[in-house]
Amino acid sequence: MRPYVIVNVAVSADGKLSTRERRQVKISGADDFDRVDELKAGCDAIMVGIGTVLADDPSLTVKSDARIDARVRNGKPEHPVRIVVDSKGRTPPDAKILHKGPGLRIIAVSDLATDGDIAVLKQYAKVIHAGEDTVDLSILLEKLHGLGISRLMVEGGGTLIWGLLSAGLVDELLVFVGNIIIGGKDAPTLADGAGFISESDFISLKLENVLTIEEGVLFHWKVKNKGDE
Image (cartoon, rainbow, N blue to C red; front, side, top):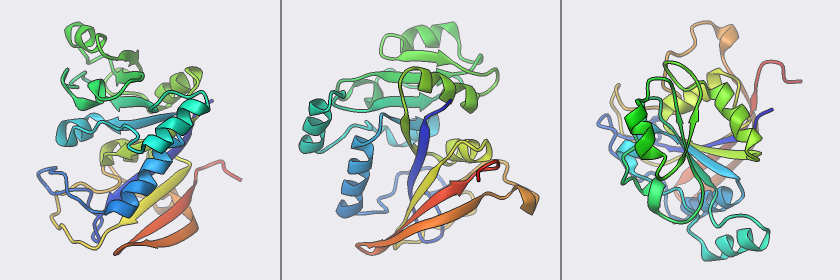
């Protein structure tokens, strides 16, 4: 068993998550930020890769006081569980994700993480081991489900999203396409990684909805994983 996984990202019109230097770029505006906050408030946990933490230093907290109050009234913590996929245990001890707002944090590491780094991270977060050289995402999701996480939102980056998609672990994909072009063959995309070679391995999507938001477009897809009816 694993959580229901929703990937939510914003990309430029040419499909880039950020610049080639991995510098954070404002792609969407206030209306989309509010949509994302609502989605976040409706999930049990939010997950990002270590690259996103190092580049953007996100807090992954719910911003709306009304949504926080609604979560508390429903018996939930103020903020979803915040999860970092961090094979080598490189999450900085002063990262916002470890300090801003109350609630459980989880750092998922592989066997490459040192005992020293793990000891430091355990001061701020629950550390989960899953995998040898990299975090085994299937094992991680099983462990998260065992902790009561049934609805998981993923915000990036491209390497983590590729890993989840290629392993058949994504159920929905929400992509906001903004009205800018970033360019650069080395700029990160939605699904970085090895990539598929054979068309038979390509992942098919079922379009659920298309919505115009400000000067951009939100695409909502269901993912057709192998074995789905």
